[in-house]
Every structure is written in C-alpha cells, then in structure tokens.
Length: 228
Image (cartoon, rainbow, N blue to C red; front, side):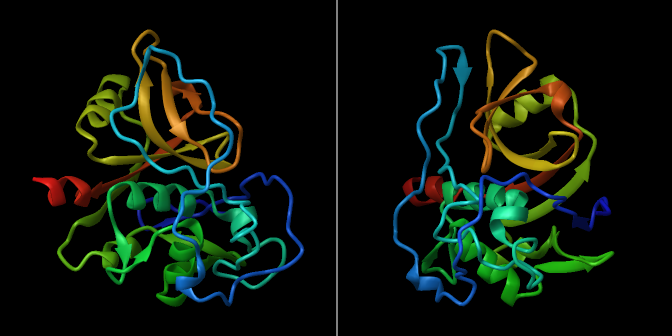
C-alpha cells in the first residue's frame, strides 16, 4: 500500500490477532458499553515516566474487530486488520476527554463509524482504509483538535519534551512501517525507550530506532479544562 505524507496515512496491514466471524459495521454508535477495554497489564518499571493515563483499545476486540473501515471487503477492510492508526487516535481522544457529538464516548468502534460516515477514509491504489489525517479536526467545534504534520521523527530530547508537555500527541509508525501506536511516556534510565499503548501487540515499549515516521496532533485536554 502506498504511504502518502502530510495529507493521508496509509495504514498498511496492521498485523492481526485473529478474526471474529460476525461483523458489526452497522452498529448504532450508542450500542457500545461505557467501559474501557484493556488487555492484561504489562509490567511498567519504576524508571517509566508516563504523565497521563490513556485507555488501551485493541483493534481486534470482538466488539468492533470486524467493523468495516473505508472499504467493504472481509477481512481486509476491518478494524482488526487495518485499524492501528485509528485506534491509536481513539485512545488519545478519549484520554483527553472528547466525545462524538458531545455525547458518544470515543472507542475504536465509535470513531471508526464516525470516520466512515464523515469522509474520514480515502482510497489509494485500491486500498480504501487510508485515514484522512485532518478529518478528526472536525470533531471539535472549537478547534481543539488539529492535525499538525506527518514527518520523520524529531530528536529524542524533543520527543521527551512533548511527552512532558502532553502536546503534541504522538502516534508513531513502527514495525517496518506496518503498524501505528500511541506514545504515552519514556524511560528515565534509557533515553532510547518510549512507552506506548499498542492496539495489537503485547508490548508497551519501542526503541527510538524503531520509529520510521510520526503523526502529530494538537489535542486540547478537555479533562484539564473541566477541572481548571
């Protein structure tokens, strides 16, 4: 699949954990339970610095695993197969207090449904599951969500500064450009290790050298705005 810088993100084929037989692509947005879906806790050493908690959504969670994305082919066009970047973005948006239409909680399934119904995917070379990177901007009527750029990774020190500030949000492209994950922290004892929420693999760290490119979003934290 073609990878297009700046305007679109080709999700490539996110390695999957298996497929569920039924599909859920016609679910009502309000049908998802109001809870966070997580896998078994991974060990987090005392040297980890993770300043904010984000939910962990698995793209192959059976609730939304077989929801269609931009295309309609099973199993290729499903959240389980291609939903790593979208799920990473859903985790960031939920963690910062955003809702769909100011009411529906954001999960992988609900964000995917919104993108599917609001021209949030586009076709490139037959792959219709490419995320339109600035489409999530429309989720905030006040400009609280803005796609900044897709580029090569900045320096390690710059990434650590962004973690400290919790702005911008970083979604990194790893595993030889086949997978996206949400950056949530870094290791204070090893500058090359970053902590992530990975929507598919049973890991919570990647090395700086694993990063091919990075998606940057400015997402105003609504949870802090509510308490200020």
